[in-house]
Image (cartoon, rainbow, N blue to C red; front, side, top):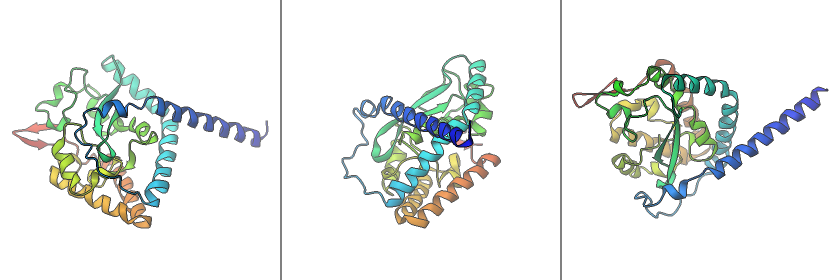
Length: 257
């Protein structure tokens, strides 16, 4: 078999996989059901996205998420086996989050906590999170392996590689603060400007302001928007390697690393 034939077969297989992923994303979309009685749908007219956001940024999101899902599949398998061995049950954790324009969507994570852990409370807001963490949970969280399933959320268009981190459905204070800066009008991200400038350590007002700074850069489009996305992406890699800004709980009412 010639190299040209092998390349053609591989290309056809990738196209088939892409179509399967696309069909699966459409069939599993529960946005309409989740949006029932959603208080964040303000009825504002949709914001017109720039050429960069509609085509360049979305194209990069599809490219990175699709090939990320394929190339990291061995990592997905290993992490899944480790979680199941530690605490048998579902290895993925689904949670209702606030997406673009206030619409709800289901965010996916690897489960780093026991099945009896509070479902809609941020880990850094728990008084004693250690009682819920799996034996491997701290490693999974500090290495950000728990975030890898969100590549699927990026592929299906609910998230972007870079953007404001999606708020929990019950974090109305954060959603309201972001509204002042237009940060609810863009796709939430796997990482963002706030995450590389403090992550869980930031107060809500500071986090929303940084999200607003990101949105302003995005609205400028072109090289300005691309440069901001690139800065967030590469600084995220450094932050993960240094394990910056990850909080596991509260002590005396104050967040603690």
